[in-house]
Image (cartoon, rainbow, N blue to C red; front, top):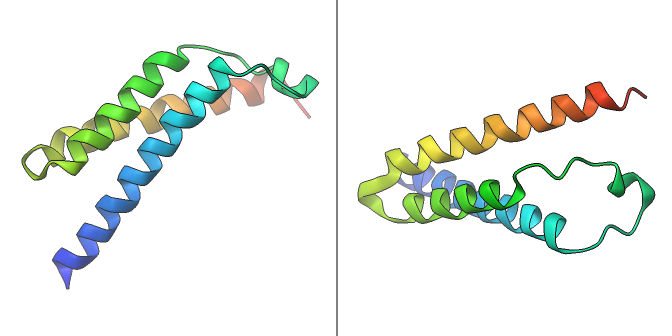
Length: 92
């Protein structure tokens, strides 16, 4: 049961990392459609996408899951800081 649960959680984390990377690439490559999207900071989108893809790759390889978790943690911290800066720059 534990291995099945950890396998499902790892698969969900891989999907989340790939989704984050694709979102960052789409945000930096596609032109924004709404005025609100134009005000979002671009930041190092390519670097975060790169980290997301590598985290997903390391999580997919059984012997490098620890490195994948490390990269996923870096990715989460970067997203939290970006959301926090966005909240500070656009008070509602």
